[in-house]
Image (tube, rainbow, N blue to C red; front, side, top):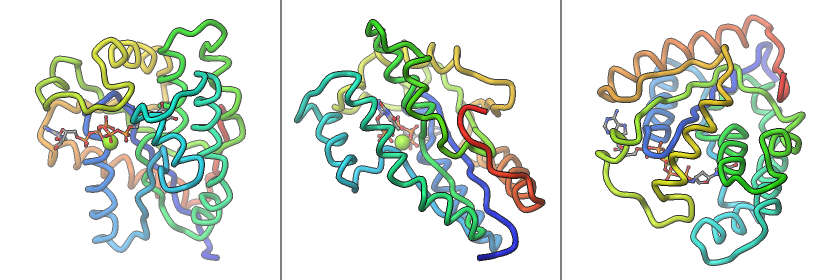
Length: 212
Ligand code: Z5A
Ligand code: MG
């Protein structure tokens, strides 16, 4: 175990805003600077719950909206201990989607009873990110990045509702990033934010829990 902990750095945002692109670039840049960093993503489709989520997203299986929400949360809970061990060991985790996507997507469905308060409950107690970078991209600019994939939530109506939900969830500590710029320009801003979070973690700021 090293003396100082790593940071949990998260990318969130609607479809095609560039989360996976920026997360990959950030891990590479951090490693080049000698920072121990790993790329994490949710859902983690490799675990047992992840396989069920993958089948649901590909419309190969169906289940109740409440049940799939709890599976997405379970997919994070089953990796909580590993996440905490890695962070305690000084590894910075760059995470592509997390509980915020979980809540935004389920609440955006507008199903009676599954409002934001209900959606947030199963996430209570998971590690809170040290930085949350919300990549902001209009639906029109996202559309210019190519067509939708074929997964369940990849429709214009759902994406609009998800974006509105993300906006209603925004908290003052989030870093909102204009994602409609060149990858390299965004990456510079992202790196500054990540380095700030890594510094705070290193200097002893404790890891928080959702929804502090
Ligand atoms: N979901 C849920 O319901 N509950 C949960 O708890 C969680 C997730 C965690 C998983 O999708 C689905 O599960 C998702 C939410 C739901 N449903 N939907 N929709 P995913 O995360 O696996 O989705 P994805 O395939 O990675 O797509 P994405 O995340 O929407 O895209 P992205 O990662 O934000 O963008 P990207 O792949 O980096 O880039 C998209 C394209 O734009 C690509 O061609 C890039 O080359 C291009 N790009 C990237 N940056 C730029 C810039 N700066 N300029 C121009 N072009 C760019
Ligand atoms: Mg992605």
